[in-house]
Length: 116
Length: 114
Image 1 (spheres, rainbow over the protein chains, first blue to last red):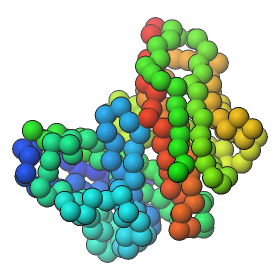
Image 2 (image 1 turned 135 degrees about the horizontal axis):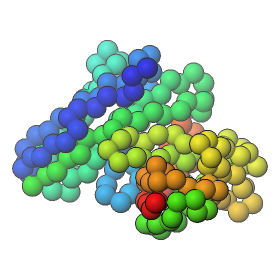
Image 3 (image 1 turned 90 degrees about the vertical axis):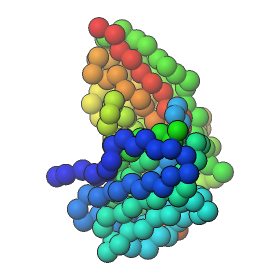
Image 4 (image 1 turned 45 degrees about the vertical axis):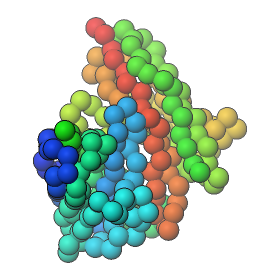
């Protein structure tokens, strides 16, 4: 079974430029998560999707970050414009939620963003 | 809010040494507890989990016991190998809006020397 796929694996951009990350979850998984992982820290949730609906985006900086999950499968996370402080690893995870609190999250390899 | 505190790293051991990585948590409810491992260049992988007090999670020779009285979930392995070199994350899950929300510690980098 294929795992969570993310692309690109690495991205270097100059500040004020836009950037987008793509995630393909495990087939059949209805829940998708985007996390931000700063250097030396644990991941922090940015947004969670149940199918195509964003059910928790309370930690997403909406002035510059946006996300979408069309058709409830693949997802894209965008930053526009990027700032120096956005340099981090962006992780995607997916799970199959069949009941309250029963899902295990599976993570992709992440996209390492460097903003110059 | 809920939080997880892990042993400061990095940790360096020799092969076949005994490993302990400490993890304590603060939570208002009764969370499930997890250890994730991140090998170089890879995503986080679930290593083990425990869903209630006194449960012991185990996998690949690693063990951790959910201790409610000390709010701890320390990771142990009796004899580490070079291939265990990775970053280890302790996490708890808090139910929010009916779904699992993971809260992670800061991670502990483990290096095993041959």
